[in-house]
Length: 235
Length: 235
DNA sequence: CTGTATATTGGACTTTGGTCCAATACGAGG
DNA sequence: CCTCGTATTGGACCAAAGTCCAATATACAG
Image 1 (tube, rainbow over the protein chains, first blue to last red):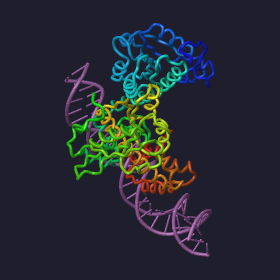
Image 2: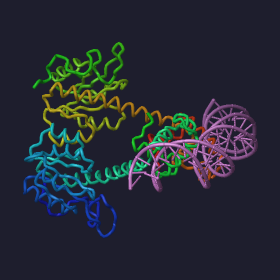
Image 3: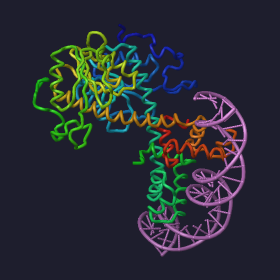
Image 4: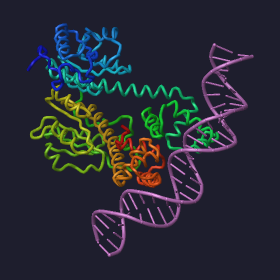
């Protein structure tokens, strides 16, 4: 059982050395690697894990406490994940997880712990943790979890960005246009919408055209899909 | 700390006594209650938990092993969930969970265990368990978990049924109609579809009308939504 | 007060989609 | 062999949607 000391790179074995982190698979001159944020109050654990993670080709930032993390939290320019001790002086790992859920940062969490119990594990997993690893952490377990966490970060970021894009377009609609859009994606005919809103059909056509334009879609099918994505439901 | 012996009903306190299980909220003469399937090799645990669960107004079926469960598995007429010991002679609880994932039964699982560890907990939760409770199980914990599990069962069943409905309608389409539908929900015009398929636009209109009919939708918007649901994506 | 954004409408016209009628071709199964 | 389901097409016609032109009213901000 190897424990956080191996110096030989252990990362994803199916990848060529120059392309370690599977989250970005461009062949190019090595784009800046994904970041792993490591919080642990034990300096020796920090050192050992940081070395391991770096050896797998990731960038690492370490923090001694949840508070320090919250203070100098890095900008979320690139996909990242969090490796986090559960029990720490001050804010616990679980507490930090709760805090982060209130933000809309995307930071998948891997818990590591020396004194975890089952209820704590369940709580963390229910709250969306990627993994929960008892110390001593096996290198392969941690790296596999990091791989998964970063994959999730990339995926969730893409989804969030998509949702934000759509929301910003919806925000550019006038109230009337929004009304019209809502009825259009319910499958109502222009004449029905006109009756519902108490205006003539001609006007609906104008609003409708502007909706298609502002929402940047070319077809009703796309508009329906985008509206679904934005949480505009039929019922 | 109460432990699986309380006789006073503990179920959802916000519900009136006649309406215990929150999964069915019809007022009527008490529809048959949801079933909780209980698997544990320890007779005393079976007895105690069965009594607790019954006292909360659920129907209970007990099994002494995963194998016995698989043999005389009840029909899934009504929403149900599984309360399951992790370690048992023969097939373990985790094994059974894996088996069940291969079927399309909807049976949310609550694990209970006397000798669980963290990796096992993580594995179960990752595999979709509703909860993972160390023995001795507190009454309130178990009942809360059952409530959640049944809620999930009801929800997932509804989703599955919806998906199956849609699939059965798709199955009734002719190959040509399916092709046409796929292009229609991509937002293609009839003339474009006609060109793509090498037939005249008129024919597309016929297929299209039949698609709308067979899929039981009244508008293109509904067709797009239903197709999305059936996993017919744009890209 | 003036200008910009919003909401509304009109006419004229084209394109697209949907419907009702009817008809031909082909392969599988009774 | 005949029938049924599937796929295909045609014409005529109507309904719905989209487009290009232009115009008016109102509210709010600078």
